[in-house]
Image (cartoon, rainbow, N blue to C red; front, side, top):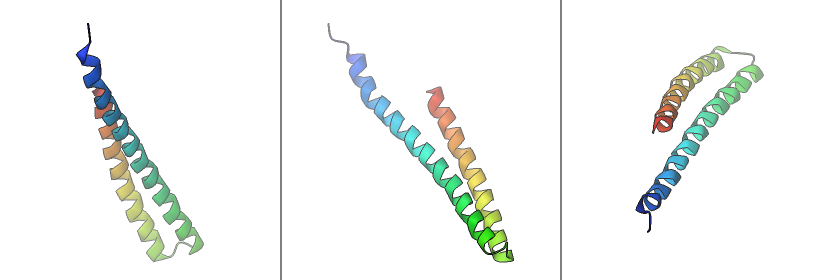
Amino acid sequence: MKDDHLESREPAFFHWMFNVIVNWTYIFVSFSSVVYVFNLAVANQFSLTYTSLLLVTFILAWFFVGSRQHALSLLGHD
């Protein structure tokens, strides 16, 4: 007897795994952007422009990483 439940789960697993990989990629890019802007600020001796850019980048990355962590927790719950 053929089990139809396994066939319907395979596409769902690949879709789930794709979403996990995309969320982790977004997190990695967010951290990388903070590191990049920090290095720019260091190279320009923390001038006002680069310090404010670093602050804005850090705050945006903080909220973005938090939202991606929440999305990962929802994916883990499923």
